[in-house]
Amino acid sequence: MAKAIKLADIAEVLKVSKVTVSKALSDKDGVSDELREKIKKVAAEMGYRQNSIARSLRDGYTYNIGVLIPEGFVEMYHSFYWELYQNVLNALTQKSYYGIMEVVNREDENNNVVPRMLQDSKVDGIIVMGELKKEYVEFLNSLDDVPVVMLDTYDKHIDYDTVTSDNYYGMYLLTDYLIEMGHRDILFVGNPRATSSIQDRFLGFTKALLERGIEYTSNSYISDREIGKKELNFELPEKMPTAFACNCDSVAYLLIKKLQDKGYKVPEDISVVGFDNYLITEISDLGITTFEVDMKTMAETAVDVILKKVRKVDYKPARRVICGKIVIKDTVKELKK
Image (tube, rainbow, N blue to C red; front, side):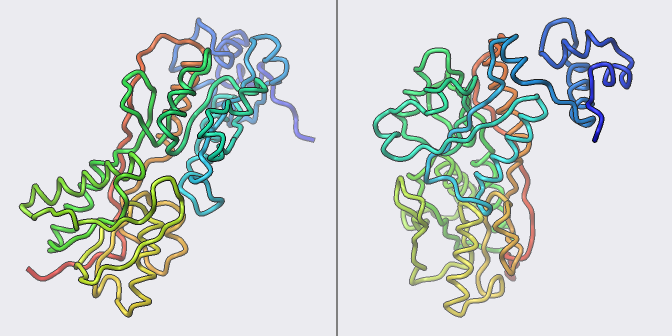
């Protein structure tokens, strides 16, 4: 049986006192931020586990953070939000916290039902992932003593804490890359009214067109879904562009399959870019050129913010935007100029 790691073991490795280790792991004053993070990192690497029941009784916290996801945004294994959730769990573990997922069904969302994990006092705060109705978001933020952070979504209220990827600039860069590769007839695939993320990506797409002097019209996009529904459903246009800019990798994957079924080759006949760079690309015969969202940093940032809110650390609410990068793979062809 493996030896249980104690505070003294961590203190010996770092050449500090047990009191210092205890303060760092309990997020108490008297330890610098740099040393605190170092102690937590070494503790996690050594496999140290605090007794959560004893901590809860001592501090009055559950040491659980809830992760609330609308039912239309979660799909096991090949889902952006499932992978993002895994990153949140990893970030919570590094902070000696646990994560509890709850999926919000449409009826509860429409009727402003308090999540079960709050009803049962199971969590210290909530991270919301995915697009909830505006009224439900306002309802959650109005609940007394319930810290809330919104991850990969945002609202116009300036006093909401949000963490998002750089959707606008990411799609701007992707579209500009297509133009650099000689494409001027480009269609966006996505419903700009469906989510704030898709809308921002669409605006980045139109900026790249306008900046390059390419005329934008209302026919410059294909809607891929109905508002409030997770099913992807769209038809190919009668007149094909030379390239498609898709709002996410799953849509790009589906689009490529539709093109191949019609006899088109990607990228020989038509180029395609996606967005996110997550697991769906692994099940495609082609590596999809995309914009990689930094899910690890997004998750770590959301966890850092929610724990500050739980601990009532003095800080200002903000919308935090996390940068990403273009990942060039197999689905874009350079046209002769």
